[in-house]
Length: 327
Image (cartoon, rainbow, N blue to C red; front, side, top):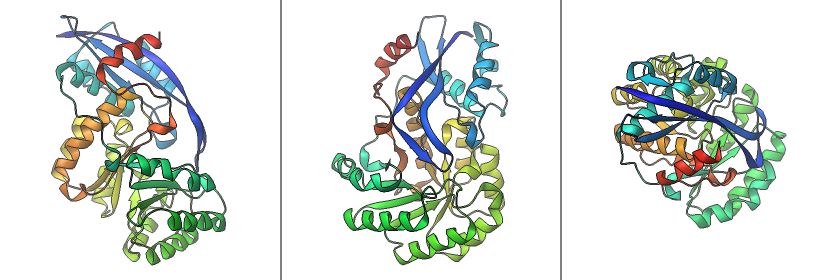
C-alpha cells in the first residue's frame, strides 16, 4: 500500500531560553510529517533534530523530506539511513500512528522529572512544580563557577522536602577534577542526588567508567549515547550505570525496543522538547520500554519539560488543528 506524504516545518520559541553547557537554546525547530492512506485516514509524526547531540541538522532533515515523492511505500518508510536518526524516528512513528488508534495517556507529574531553570533561578521555580505533583527535579551544572553552583544546590536541597530527588546534568561540561569534586560531594548526600548525567565529554569514556566504579553516586550516559549504535557500543564496553535514552534522536524505535528487550539496561527515556505529536510517540515508547526494563520502573522519566514551551495540546484530536496552524 502507498501513503500520501506531506510535511511542514515548525518553529517554537521557548518561554524562557534554556542555558546549558552547549549554549543558550531559544527556539525549538522541527518538522511535522503527515501520512494519509487511501481510505482518507490521517496520522502525524515528528522529526526533532538535535545536531549538537549528534543527530542530523534541521536543514538535512528538510532536504530529505523535500526529495521524497508525494506517495510513499512502506519499504521506503522503513529504509531511511541511520545517518538520519530523527527522520527514522519520525517516519516510523507516523506509520505506527496510522495503524494504531489507542495511545497511552499523558503521564502524571509523579512519573516525570521536571527540568528546573539553570543557576539560582531554580530556587524560586521548584515549588509550583512540586505542587503539580513532581517529586524528581533535574538541574544543569557546569554552566556557572563551581562554588556558586554548590551554594545554590545546597540551598535547593535545604528547601525541597525530604522526598524529593535531584538529578544533576553536566552535559559533558566538567573536567575530571571538577567531576570528582561533585561526586565526592554527592556521595556525602547520595540519598538526595539520584545521579549525575554525563559529567565528562563523550570521548572520555575510560575516565567515566573509572568514576562510575569508584563512587556510590550513579553516573548516567547522555551525550555519549545519542544514537542506537552508540548505545550498543557502550553497553558492550561494559557500562553498568544509567542510560539516558533520547528516543526521538536515537533512530528506529523498533530496533531500540529490540535491543532493550534483549538487554534490560537501567534506562531513562528523556525529552528533546518535542511538540505534542512527538511527545505522544515518546510516551508510547517509554511505557513499552519500562515493561522491558522492570528494574528501572522506580525512576521518573525525563519528560517534565512542558513548562518550557508554549502549550500545543496533548490530545490526538488537536493534531489536525496544530497542522493547520503550520500552513
